Length: 223
Picture 1 (tube, rainbow, N blue to C red):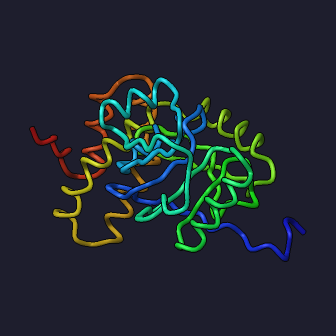
Picture 2: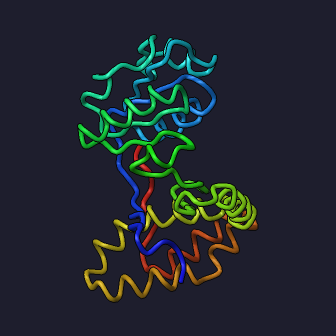
């Protein structure tokens, strides 16, 4: 039997953070990495820390993030949808997590499972393809090694395929109303040689073959 039968499993989910406030406690390298990911997701980021890394300081100066230049204090999580913290003073980390719990905000103190209501997966990104890997907090190093393996196996052609698929979705939906037929064509596309053509850099041939399979023309980008 695997896992702890007394411990509930984690529920995997992808969050939309566009225009939602996320508070990050700490201004060091861990915070720097988290902030970069959060900005990529469209979050409004507030960093609470006396000092920042040069990259975070530049983001604050450019208005990309809000910087509260002092240590965390209770009340800093007001209005937050999510809360992240670098490991710091244990008392401060406990207070940070306690406030998040009181406000029903999901929070994560890095490398401190006791003070996490969610855990951060190892991520592989290829355009719109996002693969998240978690060991439920038991062995993060294993998640990293699995991520590295997938990064070697999943090349940029997967992102290119998703970009192509995204431009086929609307034309297909407007042309083929039957769900089962649309599904059949989607599986034919992903099982076809289109991915191989993209891997070899033969984008024009890949597009032509995708249009043949789907029976519609690729939607051209606006502007």
